[in-house]
Image (cartoon, rainbow, N blue to C red):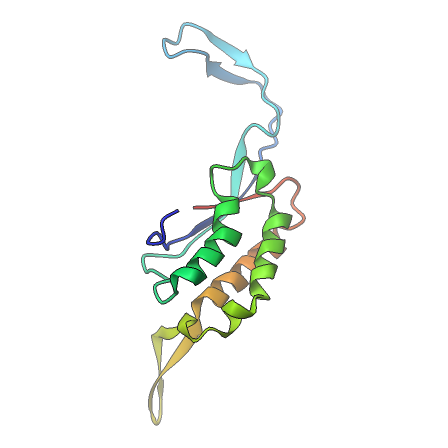
Amino acid sequence: MQINENKLNLSIWRPVKNDRRMLFNSDLSGDNTRFVEVGNDHFHEELYFWNSGPNDIFGSCSEETLNKLFVKIRDPFSDNKHPEERRVPEFHMAVNEMLEDPLLKNKNELWVDCQDIIKLSSGELNLRANLVQAVLLHFNWVSTVFLNVPKASVLIR
């Protein structure tokens, strides 16, 4: 993973419950069309999708912070792993571990101005946010929601 690829896509998948026979071409010529029985774990359906949007939400992070985040959260749940290696309970534990990390909680670099400006009677106020903490809290919510879905897996790109 390259550090300058700071955008995230999170999706939750589960095996499709398929009791039908499916038609597949066994070669590109189409001459060997046959029915193939496919198990329930062969195909997956997407249950949830979130992306970080067009902005670089980790732009204020140091390389050390990004490496820590990607090693714990992004890399173990990337698309080069099989769904059995990317289960929601493991993701939930990894996110909670990162939420408790004092390095990510207390770093001043992680606090940035929000895009929203609140107008008050005494002027304008721009609130600050810890975007890494906010993303981790969102991931915690997502993993809690899907924690008990059988064989659900996480994919982060």
